[in-house]
Image 1: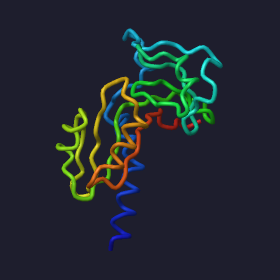
Image 2: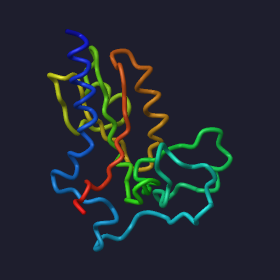
Image 3: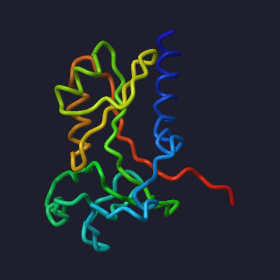
Length: 165
């Protein structure tokens, strides 16, 4: 029974990132009328700054790209624009982190870390928490994973849905 519940929770977590597009939200590059709060990164300015299969293209304002080269581990900031290195499609770090809970209250965790509860899936013990723009998402993920009552966390990277050829 535990295996079935775990597999349902994992399957649900994999489908959650598509929710942003299903509800009509736009990725930053799709909203031409909005003034961009991002700073462009010159190609090659950040060495080895890939996150999984993505390459950074723009960072949130206030983040100094030159300091990223000196860090042992590269941070991943909420609000970072990226490009998928395989498909070439734009992507965006939304600031949402999916959290699998065992016994913790998502509202309590959010208040403790300065986050906002975006969505709760109580039957699956999953909550989507939103961090403010500029938050180091990798550090937040590690912090959440070490909290009592949290069994896992995953950072949401939003990409366009596939289009038929």
